[in-house]
Image (cartoon, rainbow, N blue to C red; front, side):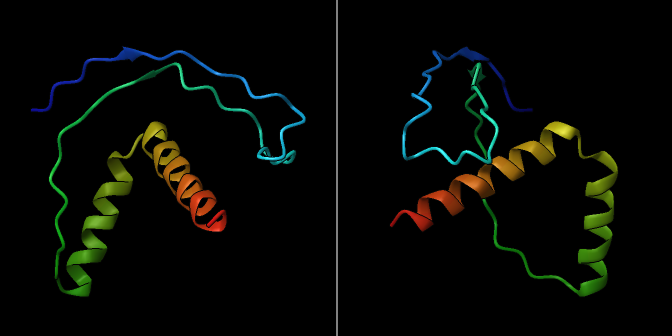
Length: 83
């Protein structure tokens, strides 16, 4: 079982005139963060097995899980588009 210890995070507000901000995106403030240990695996499986795991994942995923995925994808996209 993984240990979660929330760490308060200081927030930094960027000026609204900053060219780094997209005016169409809402502001999201990080209020705490947690470090988690995990193992990243590359998996091979049959399509039916993949579909079953996706179904199970959707049944147990929380709103926070979906937010984390979206934020991670947005950060990756932002970093890659600024290179």
